Image (cartoon, rainbow, N blue to C red; front, top):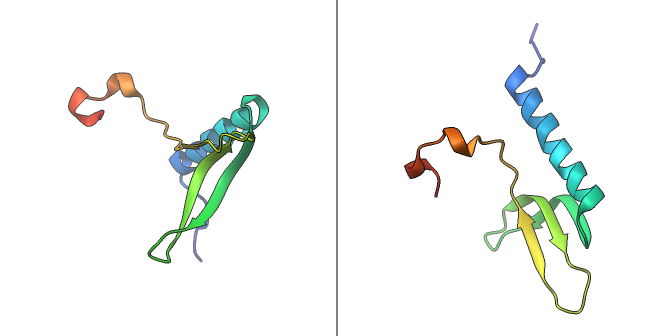
Length: 80
């Protein structure tokens, strides 16, 4: 019988991911689209953690990649 339980670090990562997306939805201005899918020029599908459209005539957008990194614990070479 196969064990389908997720490892604890994966559970925590998914919960963190959802929490950050929820905070953006609740507090950011513009149209917030979590988990926006797109098709790359190669034809492959991709996913953006949070896509923000400023909902104005300026046509500005922002793309947010969620990471749970502790930047203070990383070596400067690893932070680019």
